[in-house]
Image (cartoon, rainbow, N blue to C red):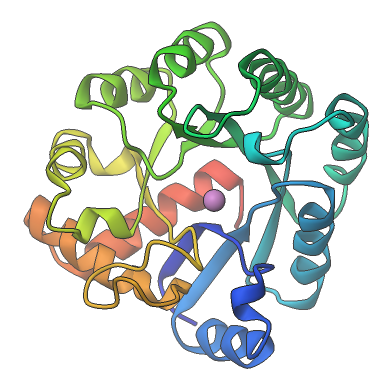
Length: 253
Ligand code: NI
């Protein structure tokens, strides 16, 4: 068992259909301490729970992603609440706002807020997606001050500092290793290690040197190496610290 804690994965994605069990068996045996598979709708939330039952290192988040919203989303919230009671559900996620796609913003905000309230009621952390919605996101976070992770963080250093002041953590993924990642590198430098966690968002966003290929949790080693370089410590120290942070956030012993 390794030191890697992948706080945000999508192993239900069809990109893994050909070799999913072989891959999970291998990375869980060699590299990965834990991976939290995120739900984006009801089927993927159910999938996450099923696979958390199959693999000791797999944990589940359940939630409705802004890209997956529709007419039935309000009704689906009660199903998410039921699913959140399943064993090994450690968070409400992946939830948030996505203004890149043309999805009604009022609906996005309502479903996001309802899930923040649900997480609070259930004493669960959240895993948050924020794409081109930093202003509204920050307004809502200031109001609700949730516990959890802002995943694949793409905001300013000022925004990172503010959400960390509520006790939230910043999720860093493959983007940290990209050539054009100036803002993300600055965030990684300015935010104390105790508020940083690592993630893949696999199958997407593989770090350099595997950029463009299918991603999986074993690639987190490269993100840890980059963060180690930024912080002036060893990759092992980064993996150990971010693993401890993730265990604390997701309440995994
Ligand atoms: Ni994701």
